[in-house]
Length: 178
Image 1: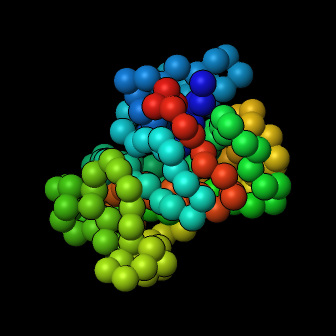
Image 2: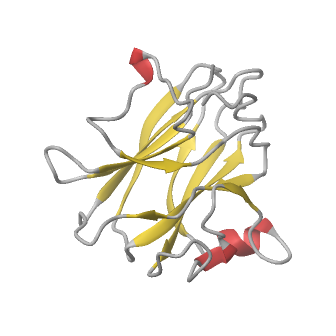
């Protein structure tokens, strides 16, 4: 069972407001895979069958009217069938938006809905180039979960969607239990 999750947390607070990206209906981490503190804001995002070279986006979420100046991005990714290629990356981006509506005011042609992210009209790269990079997870050749803090950022808008691009040479997850 894969336990893929991305966690964004307030870098300054003792009890941080966290935003957790996962398939929450089936998300069930084991003890060693827990990266949450308390009860985070749950945002739907499925990495189901995320092929090498492909990307997905989360549902649009809200940082809140009062939000932290800085957030830390912590990720937990697990492969199930084949080890990823050592030294390759899973890359993370933010499509920040001043609008709350899913399909409104999004950079990089993001839809604001959980699902595949295809980028611009012609290429994935067109859309990615218009997003804010959050960081990259440099993976090892291991199917077990890989956890890392990959970046710190300051949101420029109240709303956004997380974009994840797989560049590891393998499919991230082959089951919906993530």
